[in-house]
Length: 230
Image (cartoon, rainbow, N blue to C red; front, side):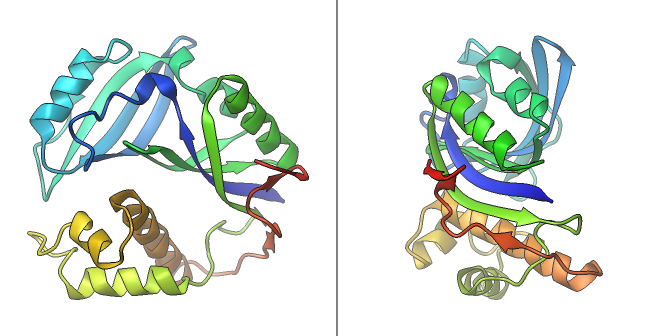
């Protein structure tokens, strides 16, 4: 059995990166240690004001070697940066056996979906974040077997948002509606809409393409870690 957790953590050193572009999101594509002190991070920037974003990345003291890897395509652009591992919690979760499944940085914090080998490992990571003064908000916690961890039915909100995205042309090229407009229709934040749509797509693809089912033990309360609230 393993544990899949969804949570938002605020890393103080990164809070100013998206100043002036609060409608943009950075969706993690990959994160690799170049050496014990340096990480290479590849991400998709989703939004409109790439000039302001790039200026903010260049001005951030802990970010180095900002490299655009693609031209702007359908409101997205791919970047690669390097930054000190000490400014992140990378070694904390890797040393505990954690695996990053999804991650999105927005002006409200870093949303992450991660797999841990057990509850104790995740609890240790949670304690590490709190010891560093990082605000930690747990939104989902689930035990899974070795089948794909998110192969389960779509929730009603995921279904509604996914249907609206298809119907209103979010997946068209070019897009006929932005993520912000979709979020407004459902009276949620852009980050929440992005996360809901991504999870809905993941669930739909798992159910449609992958064989087998997940035997899940859902933790009774999503805000409880190791018998105590996050």
